[in-house]
Image 1 (cartoon, helix red, strand yellow):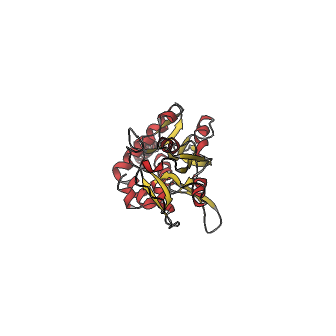
Image 2 (tube, rainbow, N blue to C red; image 1 turned 90 degrees about the vertical axis):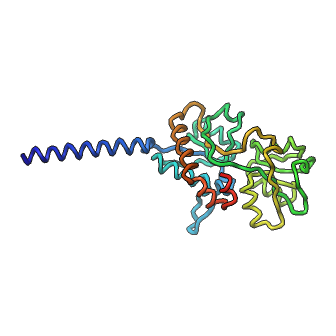
Image 3 (spheres, helix red, strand yellow; image 1 turned 180 degrees about the vertical axis):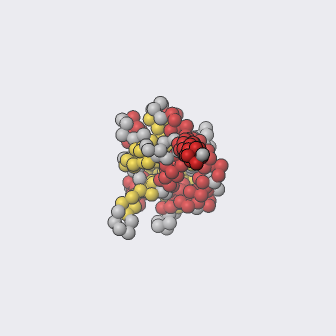
Length: 266
């Protein structure tokens, strides 16, 4: 009788363990996988390289915190691959990365070559400029010298406004061109402009309306995947992003990195 009872207990425990394991696998379907994630760490507060007190270099920002949250909830590990923004899609196409998270907008042109997640951030475009230059609308950019990151939508948008555009590889170079007076303005996300004026008091920024940018839909950021190669990962991440919008996770991240003003329109 005791042996039979012990066998029943063992069987029950085994069944419970199996169910628990299956449940955990269902909740974290990518456990045991390591995904190479490409990013361009020149876009604070979304991704930026910093050096800690021990002298170690690391990438931090809103996108990295979101990636860590997705990694934890879906079970995968990740390794970051660094490149210029213009090389990110190429990393996916050449199988050097299985995902891109780098403040990227899902434009129709890019969507021909990669797949995108549902958007995780509502963005606003701004022009950073010296305070002695007055900008009250997009019309003020006509014949103005401005810098923007190469291969971004910013370049096309300000060209349509009549600006003379200098396209550069990174956001750092764009800002440097403004600081040294090579251009009169620098086009970037509002959050970056907001961050830069904290240490550059002689500058201000103007935020464009969607109408001025001639946008048919709001400007947003999404995660990119190799074309037609990661449907399960894309679907799982879409589900989590929708959850994070609903439960306030994205607003918390926005508040941490950009303040309540930006979090309010997420």
